[in-house]
Image 1 (cartoon, rainbow, N blue to C red):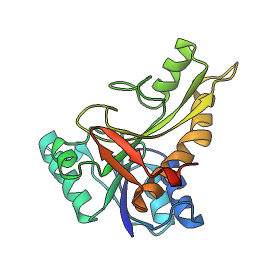
Image 2 (cartoon, one colour):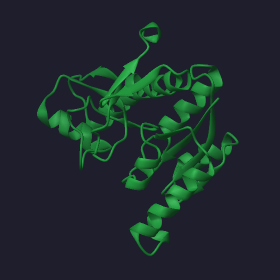
Image 3 (cartoon, rainbow, N blue to C red):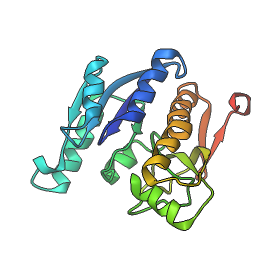
Length: 212
């Protein structure tokens, strides 16, 4: 059984997709050990409570320095003894010590087809604003492993989404969530939970029999 910790900053729609996936069998061999947020007002923490999942807030503002916060964040993660850490809209830079300790055991969902519209400054609506400003016809989402860079780790899954005439950033964000993020993040967790994913030389290898 794969123990996962989900880290969130806001509403937790991707967390809900994971909760639903575990509940309906889309995600197998997995239990959600806990939810961690940097924001005590994050609705994601309420989602955790409603589903009987332990949740905690670890906020940078509660500590005298980023170094102390980083240590407390890692302590909070370690306390859940996870096999996999899932960043589901977590808007805090992951401490280097945590990346080293959980090498190839942290995944992130990003709302674009990496390497487009990713890296420093590209998060949330900013990604979709940039995509519309550039006039691209296809966007999407990416699940990738986390390394020391920003959105530079090995790519696990991607799914494309069509841009439609008249799209606003908000409309496009919702479509990317519904048609990509909420599909590939549960899928990625299920693949990992069933031993179907390996990382070799900064590339992921997925058991071909499981691909659809």
